[in-house]
Amino acid sequence: FFPTRMIGPDDKFEPPKEWIRDIREVVESECPTPSKSEFRFETSEEAVQHNGALFERAGFDFEGLMEDQRGTTVWHGSEFRPVHHLEKVIGRHPNFEYLVDIFENGMDYVFRDKISEEERAAELRAQLERGNHKSAKGEEEELARLLLKD
Image (cartoon, rainbow, N blue to C red; front, side):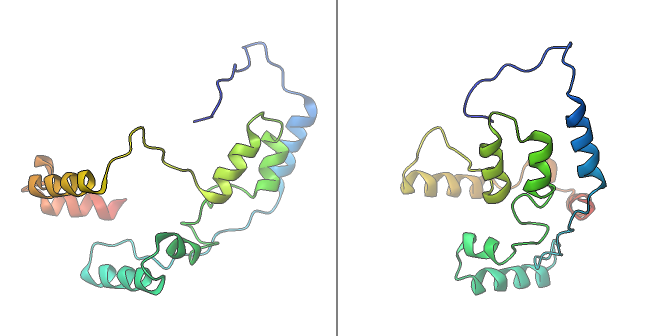
């Protein structure tokens, strides 16, 4: 997760009193609630068409699509308090700036190996030929129920 290895505090760590005060201050402060995303999290054909139209509106550019959702529940870091709140609590962490970048811009998924476009296409074809996992076959209603639950 972090680019460098770190040693954590031991069991004898005593947090500074001002840190506890800062936590209290953050907890008691107002925190903006993200607005609802335009995405429809359903498995219906209507939801597929709606979400496809959002993607088309963004010029089929995923970054543009996400930029259109800034300030909503799907925006990077929307599940966290604002950075200025987090800074009071974890701002002295040696990798805080790295965390801020994740909160504000999302986290890159780094692949160990790069594959060619031909390899990627072959992998996709193989996955499509294999189809759904055997646990999803014959249990379509249960699968739909579980998806909707999430």
